Length: 232
Ligand SMILES: N[C@@H](CCC(=O)N[C@@H](CS)C(=O)NCC(=O)O)C(=O)O
Image (cartoon, rainbow, N blue to C red):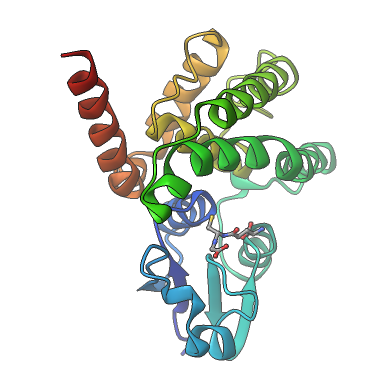
């Protein structure tokens, strides 16, 4: 009998949340192995030598086969496991459009959302300092430009990004957008189509969305408390 895959992850990370929801929703048997980024567990020699030589999450191990990079993991799981077709349809044009998004998102959504999260929360937290307002403002401007492009080019009237069914593209995109959202940025204020799509996508991913977001929901809660305290 084949063993469940091992999944190494931290729900603080966008691609880890995307894979977590995908594994759950697709009912792929897996063993969860929590790796704390904030405690630096991904930097241990054991993790480097035995799990992911790049020392990042997510990573998987399928029997003796080790794989990192979320997009490669998604493609591997779709090929090797039983996965509902709608996530990554066989049909040429739909699959190609999802591939196009996955290539686009690395230099755009992922770069902008990660940078905002880093400037506003992660770097100050790791160095016990306050965020640099100028750097946060620059990062916010880049994020707004990117969200405007996302809305214009990827939300063009289908129910979800690519088609009338949810795909891996929606899953990856919602996880990216939730990262700056968790640290005080409102991605819905200027982008009504993003707000509608986010709501639909979130609903389609429940109950896994709620489970996956517990870690960043706590950050969002604390950020809101901080803003209220500053106002009082
Ligand atoms: N391109 C990789 C990115 C992986 C990545 O950057 N993971 C982050 C968390 S989102 C990480 O492990 N960072 C730890 C570090 O850079 O020290 C993927 O899509 O899996």
